[in-house]
Length: 287
Image (cartoon, rainbow, N blue to C red; front, side, top):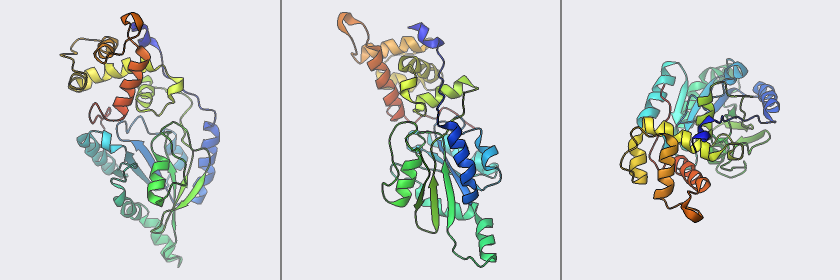
């Protein structure tokens, strides 16, 4: 079981170079950029290439999935972005929470664009925004919520959107959807882990048992009480992730013939419960 700890999460999506090219080409068509990040991992869910791609275009960051993130941590992130001159709002795109603040935030972030349009006699010209973000950060859910329909494909899987699509969402705003994009390799293995924990990396290319043990290592260090409360374990002090993983498998009765733990079933359950917020509202990174 301890061997699980030695493996590294990696993912090399074939469509990435094409997406990078599409984003570069599409930037000429838009006034600004809406970037979705996962509120649980605002640093790791940022694409490090994005700054160089969008350059000086106005940007609004949506910290999505705030419903399963720690509210106090999210407030700290919003404050951090504000102090760096970046517009950011916490949202939950599946329920629509926080999205009522989006239009006002767009008008603030793109005030110079609106001013220029009015100087040219183009009062009320639609503001065009490109929606970007790594896979599974909720781009399609966001667009569907804003557009009030389900035209953009949505799935709880990494990399569903494959081509650029335009959506008129009213209030003088048009959104351009783009495929999710990741960089070729994770320079920091911790970033790769966190993306895998939250489902940004396809489960099919990760070892879920390894992933679950590493997730437990992190939670033992940061949120031990959430593990003990959820899985009715007395204490996780001094234990490794794989040891707690086996305890959880036994507690849940996930056993095969002969009493051996069903590692796969335990791993699937752990990942699902973490991602669904059933362990509690957890943020893995602070600014």
